[in-house]
Amino acid sequence: MTHPFYITTPIYYVNDVPHIGHAYTTLACDTLARYKRLAGDDVYFLTGTDEHGQKVEKAAEHKGLNPQQFVDQVSQSFRDLIPIINAAPDDFIRTTESRHKKAVQHLWDELIKRDAIYLGEYAGWYAVRDEAFYGEGELVNGKAPTGADVEWVTEPSYFFRLSAFQDRLLELYHQNPNFIAPQSRRNEVMRFVEGGLNDLSISRTSFNWGVTVPNDPKHVVYVWLDALTNYITALGYPDQGGNFEKYWSTTVHVVGKDILRFHAVYWPAFLMAADLPLPKQIFAHGWWTNEGEKISKSLGNTIDPVELVQTFGADAVRYFLLREISFGQDGDFSRQQLINRYNSDLANAYGNLVQRVLSFIHKNCGGVIPLPHNLQEPDQALIQECDKIMSKLEIDMETLAFHKYADHVWQLIAHANRYVDEQKPWALKAIDVPRMHTILYVLADTIRQIALLTQPLLPEASAAILDQLAIPLDQRKFLGDSLKPGTALPEPKGVFPRHVV
Ligand code: ME8
Image 1 (tube, rainbow, N blue to C red):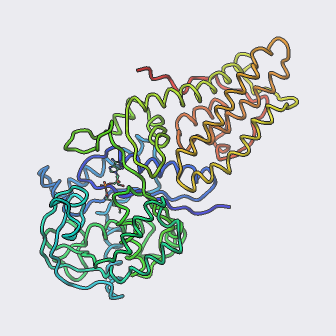
Image 2: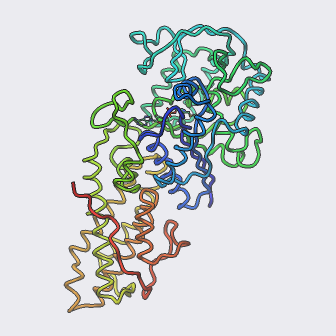
Image 3: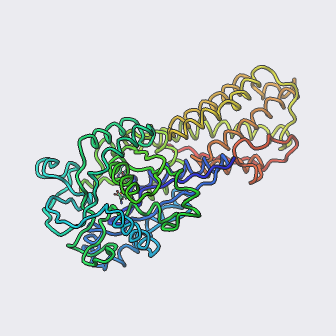
């Protein structure tokens, strides 16, 4: 059965060009989106850019550009990154688009109608880097808890009655234990909400780079209320039929741990207040450090995803980022470790399996898929492992455990490599050709299934392997038909050249 599935990345601030953190979130979402498409689901995958607010306005000023010119440029660099990392979103949203302004203003009106907003005066701390308000008690040595500089702000402001939503939010978390994942993050959010919520300032008057508040043009909508709305804009909101009706309740928002509060507290409260349905899950991933150090522009150690892909290829970068650490945990980026992973898992384990089996078939079976004869116990064992793997992989993907997904597939690759070593098809050439054909058939069909399964992680290499097995494009969803004996195969080519360093 086809299930709709909606997955979103955060929309990225365009104050600066994309870095590894952005590529990471997009790749994780792309991997899940590809998996779901291959499983036959109807996927809508959204990414885009967050273009309003003080931080972006200041960055434009700094470059001597007007904000619109500036955001057009930087947004394009995020759009350009997508094909480079081989991601395939269905839509790219920009908060400066008119479809989005219309959605934000409509949502604002709905909140006003339901008395969820009132006009007051904000006096407190604001961190432009985080685009967040902080209470006196939250400051650490005069800075935001994130380390960002804060400034004192006094201005007329509209407030959202967040304090009224404490009980409903806690009930939501209790009744839907997977609404926030992983569990450790869920606990943090619950403790925060249990501590009580203050009403939230949701408009600013000291600058004007934002969506204008309906009927009060001195105010622009607070950038987080503006930004969060992108997720429903893209589904056609204010229209609640069509894509909204189809996809919204299936939503998985993937975000970094630093922006979980906005997604797991403010966003559901805004939606509840507007009588809109809620997303299904917010999943918070961890942060990368670079060779042991926090990544920051001031330290000059940001990692450029474009350079990485130019050096190692998109597949290697995708595989490393998703395999190296469990999704949800923090991790350390190291080039040497990327090279090690590439060499051991891709070039050696996977690449060798494919290369030795396909070249052997090419040389010894006239370049066609051989005909299998009676299956023996070791053949059955490998076939059974292929049959059993899907139920494990489903759980891995449902829980966004990309590292486990890879681990399970690589266990199958290891099994297939052991099978080659033990069955020694080359030793049968002179003595038992039917048995040799059986082994090679089992291996080729195992490689077909492995290549189907690696498509979400390694789209390029998997396609090259499936091409070498002459699998038609319409047979590349999961399961697919087994190989047909007699099918002619193109000449095999190595897919993972070794990176010696
Ligand atoms: O927060 N490791 O945008 P953003 C892993 N516009 N992830 C990292 C990272 C790192 N070192 N550094 C950043 C925003 N990220 C808002 C979102 S959504 C309605 C609005 C991740 O460009 C970070 O955790 O600052 C976040 O998920 C994403 O990059 C976007 O960050």
